[in-house]
Length: 229
Image 1 (cartoon, rainbow, N blue to C red):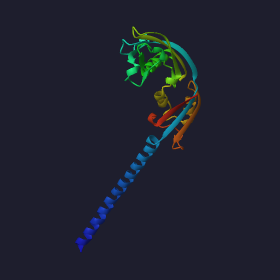
Image 2 (tube, one colour; image 1 turned 120 degrees about the vertical axis):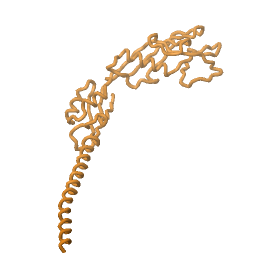
Image 3 (tube, rainbow, N blue to C red; image 1 turned 180 degrees about the vertical axis):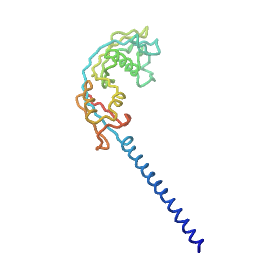
Image 4 (spheres, rainbow, N blue to C red; image 1 turned 60 degrees about the vertical axis):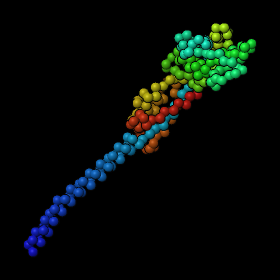
């Protein structure tokens, strides 16, 4: 009988010691999970989509480009791009090659052709030199320029073409720097900063979750789109 009472007391004693430990373990585990959830909600979950309405300016410019069958690569300092002879009667070439009627030798059926990609590359280079690093050309493509042949020489395999470009330019924003600047700022302060950027006429910020009053903590969670007009 005494042994049974002793065992019962021991069991009650152990229960009194173990139970609080389990209780505190569960309590701190739940608290830790709640903390991780809040960190996720306030740091990793939020995102923001920013639309900046930006003004642009017209750009009309002309310059000369030399076509040369004797070179293999673009010579930016000499305004020259590689070209080649092709026989139009038995032609098998790159579809990206440009054929201009004025560069066709009617007697031999040969033509001086060049890569449109090379032409776009040197046009992009020359425009960047003209407008500087603080601006960029908008929608610069094949439809934004015209080509006129000034002279050609089939004996030397060279030609000079005039490029007339009509496009628009806008401010060349450093979007990475802008994202870092507005990260975790209050929404109204972010709108003030973005609205003060050169060329920006309107700012729209769509945040998730909508209840948050600050921009996302991580710049990578901010997406900026330029609406250029």
